[in-house]
Image (cartoon, rainbow, N blue to C red; front, side, top):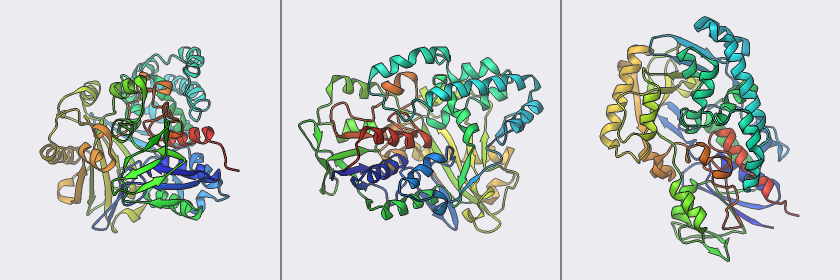
Length: 490
């Protein structure tokens, strides 16, 4: 019976551990954090709870599959609740756009904002579905190790216009600048620049429409706890507070993992849920990698960084939706500075998570819990976050108080933030990136880090930096790819 060591307890690592355990392998999962979840950590402050990681759940069947592998039902472990309004967009002119519900609900909102774009939205949604049928249905859980696999898809990609960026595709169908911005934000949800990311990633729009957006009652942390319970019931060994220092190799095979504490865990198979650049640059630096892989790791661009502000309020803001996208005055210029600038932009756009809109348990009675995320440059930009972080927090609070959260500065409490420096130190994210490798075309599919290492035959990769990419559906599908590559145990 093969011994498998999974490094990293994010959703990709958890899914891989469960899938390989269901195939009969002995599985040990190690993670450097005090609890499972990777970036989906949970913070508790003064009676307020905060999910630190992904807060938007779609494609619930991908979660259900993991429980079904062991004859269990996900609903017996954690409740998913569908949201009516998926996102509320707040624009700089004070107008708002509610996105979610049925297609007709969305069309009604578009009629209210820009009647001339109703037909265009229908066409955009249809185009997104065609891309989805190729990019997700056919390719998301398929190995992409052969360049021939990519070549076979080129005619489909050309026919679908995937040489265009997400922004170009949206502008082809929509005229109103507010709607163009709203329907171009999907690449940002997986670390991409909508002005550079191939419109393959427009499939996210139809993916949301097909399976809708859900919230795990109790938060993403409750979903992680459900997975941990399932893993322990299934006989998976979990070792937390454990950082892997190196992966010893022999004859171009991994033979185990070595921890910073000096412990050696032997393994027949190693699955990495680490940032691939950290894996190949730091953990496997002495292992044979070949010229092409060394070139790839030098040229790979990381996604942007994230500044995440957490706080509670001693009053409630019932007019705020569960998810709010607060868009500032600038769009293209701001995004270009986030991805390519050398300093912190003077302005920002924000994603605001108010879980108490759905689950009051996140805050004391009569209070609200918040998580406000601002995309920022990663650590390639020499920003002094110890001084700039508090200043950015103050500017964000002032902007929210001026627009959608009156009196915020008088009601805010239990506040703290995370910067790209925290992502680098807590999660070993190269350059403190929020989503590992950026999803530009030259870093997607065959060009991305492969799910089976090119130079260590028994090393497999899952998670945001491997195929198919970031986002919860993406990392769960990366484990399905590894599942396809590894045989069952007799």
